View 1: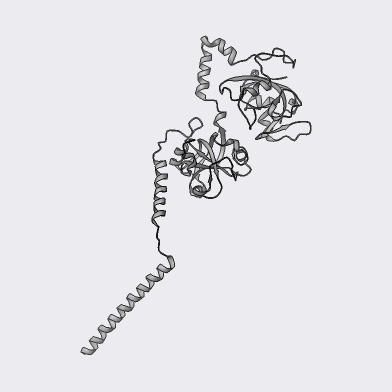
View 2: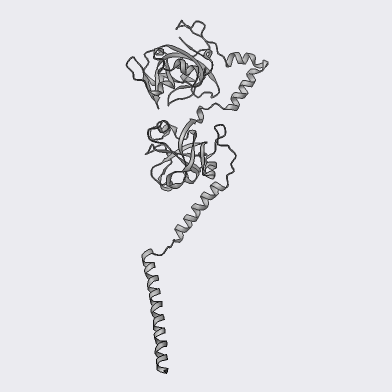
Length: 357
């Protein structure tokens, strides 16, 4: 009996050893399959630093804007929000992303290698505009007007222009915050400050500024519009209007010239004749020159046609008979489509502010 007990204890010990051996074997096997999860100190430090950098950039920003056209979100605010449907965001165009990595694919120059996106930043030059953590990528869909007009590959002159876009704040490149589904946009150098405009209107309404109103707000239209050679000191030629480009953002001018075509895109003018095929851009603008046969892009002004009477009556798509007619219009002498331009043309709701001869 004593011998049998010893044998029993020996078997139990051997069995336990077998179990322990099997357990160690399984643990070694799992380690061999998955490999050790080790982050070296350099990567660990870089990862933590990057995470802190991004967190600080977002958490330190208070939301003070509404995301409306009049009160667009900043880039930092958009990053803080992380989500937003059909909101306005404003920032400087500082580059583009050449691959599916914000960290490694950002190109902070005007020499873009892709037309599919642009990068927006809040400021320049501060150094942060060349740090991807302070930038938002904006998706430009293939075939869209937004891509045609905004991308740096085709429009390097857009570099460092301030842009206001309407779209969705959502995940984009590499699951980072970005802007997609763009439905509207405007360059900020094309915007007339609403407060300035209101102040101007208020000053015009006062009796003390009645004389200023007569001179500034409503320049005299030529007395005899049927005489194309009639001159008027308040009406400028196209050559004179070109000289005023960007001279004073808030100064209006009255210009007069022959309609010779329309701008198709960046520095591209369609000079029309009876065989010209009309595109949708012909609804949005006309090109004026001092003579009907002008074909030099440096001697013309592109006139924006805002929605309203002036677009209905003047655009060449609906009114091809307007080709080579003379147009008198009041507006701001600012670049348009990379050429000399006339923007915020008065006459959208008032036919008296423009004249076709």
